[in-house]
Length: 313
Image (cartoon, rainbow, N blue to C red; front, side):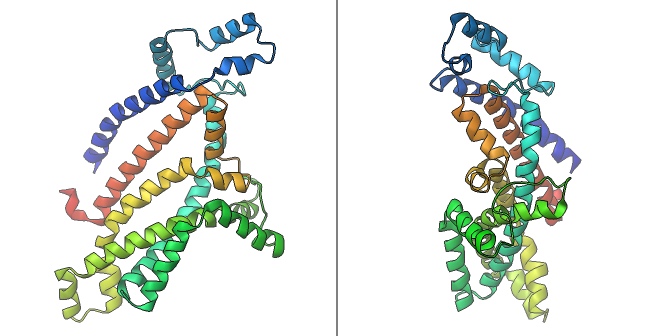
């Protein structure tokens, strides 16, 4: 397992290098000039020249890239052109919010999606199967922002059980932190649960047709043991891959949900940085997201070996 981890980490180096080159090059193709926006309405040529020199934007593009990637290797992702704050500090302040939201949403998705997928597969072509498929299709089809607004109207406006917006750090108040994240986590989790349910159902149906499952049933094993111990373990392989990919998407894809519930998260920062042409923030965020995806893929490989010991050979 250690050898696998080392190989995956070594393969990640050229991948990250390619990602860094692409995001840096594509940033230069965006229309507009962030320096003109920073200079203000007067746009004094002296001020513009000073800003370009301060942020090294007048250097050749290869020089800018090698300077940025060299600093990134030391943990310095540059300064935000808009807020004048270190990008590393901005990411460190926003990422925990989205990480906590993503973890909570993924827990909800796994509990609902896998359990419904197992039930649908075991009761294939029954009314239970058709009902769960209808619920899954509804979960995939309903837009997150619309569902979020409905949940706010129900639980915040009418029932007044949960806050409609805002965020309280877990270090300040654990209970209030969970209250502020529960509704957005439900919005994200239900959509993911629908996807996980359909994949779990398909994987379980395929495994339940296998010869060793028929053999286990012929031996007189309890149906619950056959499904949960023998079938589910092998059916989880594609689910592990899907889960890691979905979690990676949550890191940068929770923009609308964070906007609806006014959460100071990672996704909102990405969109703001793109619209503001804040090059340093966009580059740093994309690099962090890429690292996150690579680590999640590594986690998926490790989980494969834990679930299926045959892969260790």
